[in-house]
Structures are given as C-alpha cells and as structure tokens.
Amino acid sequence: MNRSPTLEGLLARPAFAVDTRVATWADVISPTRASREWDATEAAAAAGLSAVAATAAADLDAAVTAHVTRWRRARRLLSADDTVAFLSRWGITEEQWLAHMRRQVAAELSAKARPSGIDPGELAQAAWIEGVTTGALERAARQLAESMAV
Image 1 (cartoon, rainbow, N blue to C red):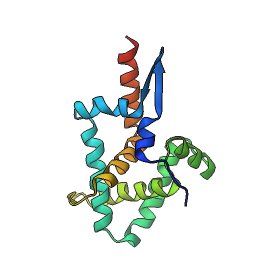
Image 2 (image 1 turned 30 degrees about the vertical axis):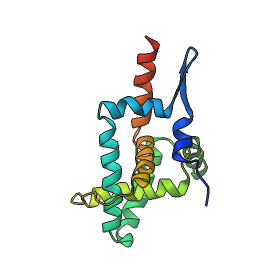
Image 3 (image 1 turned 180 degrees about the vertical axis):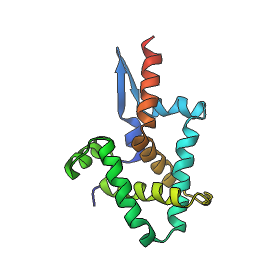
Image 4 (image 1 turned 90 degrees about the horizontal axis):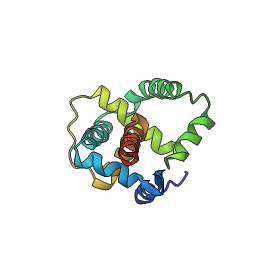
C-alpha cells in the first residue's frame, strides 16, 4: 500500500504563486469555507462515506468499474500509469482514489443515505479527494489566483 502525505502536509503545499506571494492549498480552501462553497464538497464526501457503509460491496463493483472508466477517459488518463501519476501529484494513493470512487457510486445508488457519525478526520480526507476529483480545488485556486493578481 502506498503511503500518502498527511492532509496537513497536503494543505501546506504551495498551490500557486502570484509575484512573490505563495498560496497554499489551505489558503485556497479558506475562502471557500468562509463563503460556504466548500459545504457542497464536504456534503458530497459525507454522503459517500455514509452510503458505502450502507451498501453491500458486491452491489457496487460493476457500477464502480464503469464510473472509474468514465472518470479516467474524461481526463484523458488512458493508462493506469497516467492515472497513478495524476493522483500522486495531488497526494492521493490509488487505494484512496478507488475508495472515493466507491463512495461516489454508492452515494448515487443510495440517495437516501443520511450522513451521521462520520469521523471528522475521515471526512476532511474524503473532502480533499472529492475536491480534487471534481475539480473544485482547481476552480477555487483559479478564483484565488485571479483575486490575488488584481
């Protein structure tokens, strides 16, 4: 199993720089938390965590395989090596990513799942992966960079 960096380590990584000002991923997420935009990312992560706990593993397998294939093709990650390299740049292991894909599919299959009793650390890690895989982190970084550039 690959060890991934801690969430704290990921948040401390530089996301981008404008002139001499360096913004970390924590800086990127902070305004989205303040504006409540990050709530949707956390809610999706929480729904996925709850849904996986409530769904039989065997019921997910085929749907997860199809979801993974669609996700990789949409990002032009044609080989497993391309996918692993992409995930590594974000500090995500293949195992974490596949668990996230299972959460997304389970949440889609079980729209009735109500998040409850979720460990805050597990939710924070799941929200990071949700933000990466949905593009929410990149959009937030772009918005912050634009505001810093003016």
